[in-house]
Structures are given as C-alpha cells and as structure tokens.
Amino acid sequence: MLFRSGSATSGPFGVGAIWGYRIASDGSLTAVTGSPFGDTNLAFSPLEDWFGRSLWTLECSLSSACLQGYAVSTFPINDTDGTLGSPTTTDTGISESSVAVEDHSGQYLYVGGQQCIGSSCEYPFPPPPGFVGSARLNSSGVPVHVLREIPTHDNFAPKAVAVSP
Image 1 (cartoon, rainbow, N blue to C red):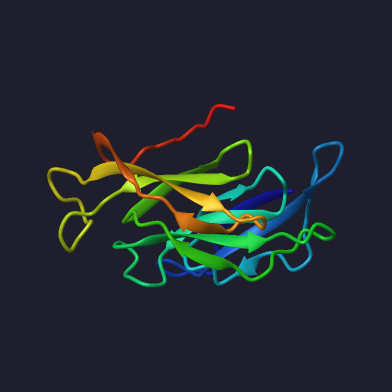
Image 2: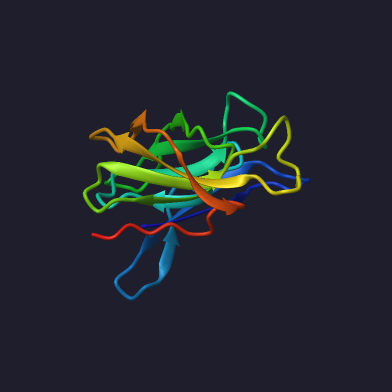
C-alpha cells in the first residue's frame, strides 16, 4: 500500500485527506475504494507501520489551536481492501510535530518537533528548541503511553528521524 496526505478541497487550508493506493507487482498504482479518506484535521507525514496494521499521521491536536499542539492519529488499515478505519488521536506533548518513525520491533513510535515558547509559535526569535519524544504502542499500533520528550539542543524541529535496527 502507498498512502499520501494533502488537501481534498480548495480554500486557504482545505480539508485534510489521505489517499490510499494499491501497488501492483509492476509498480503501478490503483486507488483504494473510498479514497480519499477525509476530515483528518490537516494530517501530514503519513507513515504505515511495519506490520501493516495501522497508518499514522501527524496533525493538529484536537485539544488546542493548530500551532499550539500536535497529535498522532492512528488509522487502522483493513488488510483485505486497504481502507482506513476511524482514527484514534494521541497528543504528542510537542507543540509542532514534524517527523515520525517506528522502531523495527513495532513497539515504539518516535516523533520529532519543537516546543513553542509562550503563547505563539509564529516565528519567534530565537526559534523554539527542537525535541524528540517516544510513545509505546499497543498491539494495534496505537500510542498508549507517551514517554517524556527530550530537547535536541538546537533550534527548530528535526527534519528527519531514523532508528537503527
């Protein structure tokens, strides 16, 4: 399967959506029935877990303004037809999440981002510090225990995060 995120409608921000595609043996793509899957609260950076059980997206947290809190949404993947089920949303504790990666055991999800200082993330000087955080995953791939985030000791959010086997 291949998943991508984007805006499904026009306007300044549109409505977030995720498109799903089946990958044929020759590499060609075919849209999954029901795709795009809509109303994802401005989802970005889709990541499918190693076991094909779920798709994670980073998105604006439902508990705060978009620039003040981000969350990981976990969509169950139907292994028969590739459709996405209703998401479970977990706050990351990081103001602006930018990247996510799963460890190779399928037990942890790591998220990188930055912490806003004060009441706004809008281009302060100096820039907010970068952070990485981790969460333990349950058997369905949902983050159930968010472990504390730690600073990266640099400005801005990490652009990439990698986990060694």
